[in-house]
Each structure stands twice: as C-alpha cells, then as structure tokens.
Image 1 (cartoon, rainbow, N blue to C red):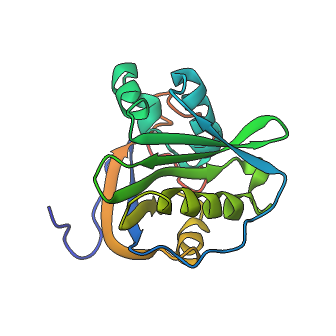
Image 2 (image 1 turned 30 degrees about the horizontal axis):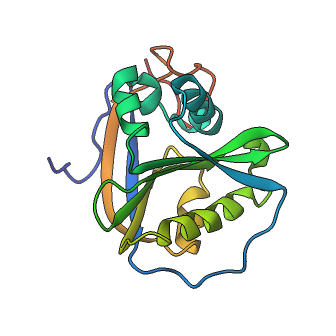
Length: 197
C-alpha cells in the first residue's frame, strides 16, 4: 500500500516510524584493528531469558519490542538457527552490547540487531563493535551486508551507519502497537516518542 502525500493519521495506541534500509555491496577498506576495553563473545544457542534481557538493556529506550513479544518457540527457531550468529560486547565482565547476524539468505548478511547499552553510548564502543561486525561478516562468502534503522532509534544511528560505509536503498513506514501500553516496555521509556492511548 502506498501512503498518500501529506499527513496520515496514526491510531491511538500505535507508534509509527520511518524505516531506512542500508547496504554495502563490497568489503570496505580494512581499518586497523580497533582497541578498547571491550571483548566480543560469540554466544552459541543463547538462552531466551538471557537474550531478551540483553535486548531490553540495549534497545528498550528505542522501543525494540518485536523479539520481546515473540513466542518462545518462534524466537528459539530464529536465534538457534545455524546461520544466525549472536555476539555480545563485554565490558567489565558484563554484556553491554548486542550484535546479531543472519546469514540465512545465500550471499547476504543482515545485521539484525546492533547496539550498546546507554552506559557505553559515546565511549567508542559502538565504533569498536561495528569494526568487528564488518570484519566478521565480510570474512564469509557474501556479496551484500545490510541492516535497517528507524526514526525511533538513537538519532545518531543513521549517520553512524552511513559513516561506516552503508548506503540507503529503501524507505518504509512501519506502524505497530505501542509496547508501553501492553507492558512489553515500561511506560516511561522512549520519551522522544509520546504515548498516545
């Protein structure tokens, strides 16, 4: 469905975001290995409670709710798939960042989730994590790496991805139930998106 030009009402209880899809179709020039007080841990067959807990800590402020609401069996079938990789950025013995790859489509890699907790925003941890993401993904036989961000995310997300070498190729509007109204997320998060119930 194509939205008409101009304003379109978003029903009460819903949130709307403009989603930008970005891609890179060739391996970027390799930067020197980034340094920092972080490590990256591959998490094989992650426990659902652990996964959702880290996802909340990284993305709750940005209303990342789809995997929180998802039925356990469906979530397990995704994150336990052999071509899906979950990595945690570790700082001071605690997971403070999430990196999830999906290699299920031949020749492609989607960065499904990428982010660090509020504690690490502005410390260089996201740049460090992105450099590792680029190295890990392009070490596989892919011809395309892609991801998406939206207007609910941190305002620096889109320019950050573009600086990393991703180019926008598609824009969509996403409308979904506000997760703060059904208890999926606390009502006080994401103050940049007013609750309308």
